[in-house]
Image 1 (cartoon, rainbow, N blue to C red):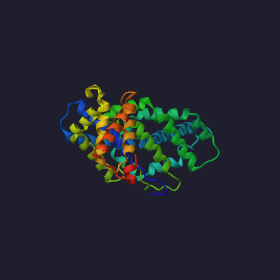
Image 2: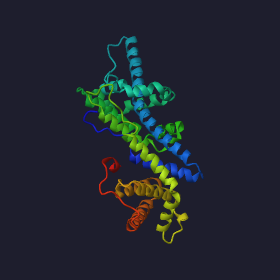
Image 3: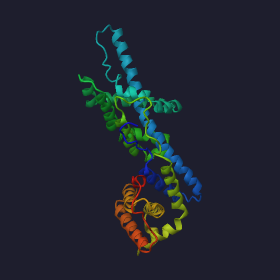
Image 4: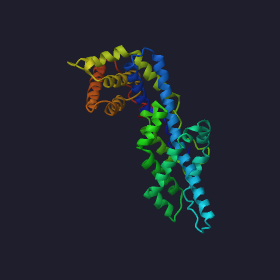
Length: 326
């Protein structure tokens, strides 16, 4: 593993997000099959990890297009009898040679070869935009040459042309509805992966695993099961915290976020209370109304204090490193 911390792709932050999304859909569709929701959760997490691999593979496919364009241009110069040669710096990029030889990524490519092939026109267009970038032109004109420079040009390509790319987002959403909210968080893990490559990296260097270990997968399943199985109790806690408000007037997403949060707070004693509340407040800010963050924060704080006073909630004084991770 080298000197790098091996992040897991599906971490607790993504798990919480996925559970909230699945529970929201469960109630919105009037579903009554918790087993179907659980299957949907596992599929959703699997598709997020699949997208992570596809985004890494996009870089390899862009390089393949770059090589073809380089060969075509060099062939034209040769036919014209020109003494000029096409600049080969980009297609000889050492970082990309490592990506192309990474066994884990190439195994994924063998099993999913048609994906970017079916989007060939987009990949070509994306590469041609790379050639227009100032950072690319500066890289190609540089006299110095290092692995760090080779890696950095691809990191800039990803950050500036692949992150926040509306056309790409639309194409991915057409391929899978699961990816509607996944791209932004997947981008952060792709960039972490690029940074892990060094000049000494071998073809056997592992990419990020889907889960760090079985505990994270079990956390996801248990959180969903507790949220749905204890729904009546959890919803009664939420209703009791709304004071003069009818709980039905509270936005469905706010209620779902609080229900999942309370399932975690009451079912996982080793996860610090503050960690749980903060995570779901952030989800409320992202997925609900502008005022939801403060409302969810106040409600969860009030309910938690009440449960502690009634001795219905006990938190371990020290949490494990894993449970303390976001």
